[in-house]
Image 1 (cartoon, rainbow, N blue to C red):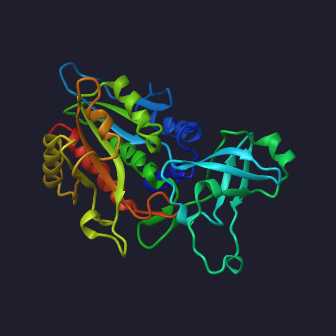
Image 2 (cartoon, helix red, strand yellow):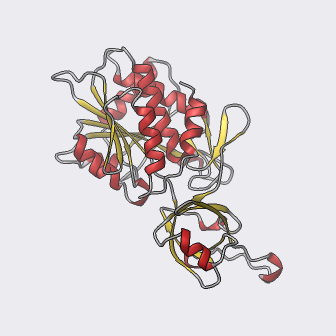
Image 3 (spheres, rainbow, N blue to C red):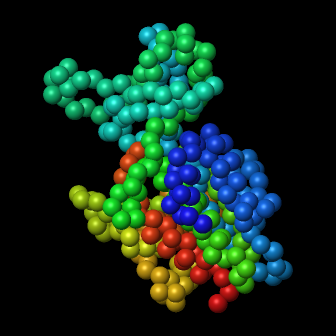
Length: 336
């Protein structure tokens, strides 16, 4: 498996929360290499890995397939597309961003930007109600192709940075999806300590909704939420961040299972896999929160890939961390 090609293919597939079909179908085609019976169930991509053995606990590997974006609210008489946000958009970077409206066909546009000459030196942050997209089309032309409720994503492709780092949009959490797929590759023909299910969940960016239904469908005993977390960049609080290239971030929180956290630490040390610790004081704001209270509960933990510039079109990861995360998952799951 080529990790870089897999990450980039997934990251460049459109899939804003609630409109994940394109990204989900791509992930499904990749997952069926390891889980032939995988299917899309109510927006989630779900598969079971290998032959499930009587008596073994069921472990779910979860990574969310959706991304942040926008939703069309209406079209003005002048032909500008007005929007609402899907997920936690950083409004500071919106002016002049290129976007794609996913209507009856994809339509490229740009978010309107007032020239600095006309702002009296002001640097106000746009409110979402003030955001408008210019496609160059008239209202009549747009009415034929765009409907209220259509999704919009940033128009961005991945690019290489130095070493094994890349930048792009939707690396949150398509790199997590790629890491789960690579873990399955590493587990081929291995004896496992768990029965394994995979959930590439929808609508995480709007409240972990897909994980809630996916957890109920799969009903695991243990769940590992493979997501991203904050990688240190200049000006940030180092105590709240991990570092690019130094391995997966293993979560510790009162809402997580310390037994599973400790098991991940032990697996990393045994296999000499570099790792980082991420301490959270309450809920994790990841899908682990949904699994931990599913039905009668599951032992849940987070395994996060460090990422800079979260929820922007220029997210940055180190592909070495994606590989190390997969190796940690595989080491934890296989029979020792």
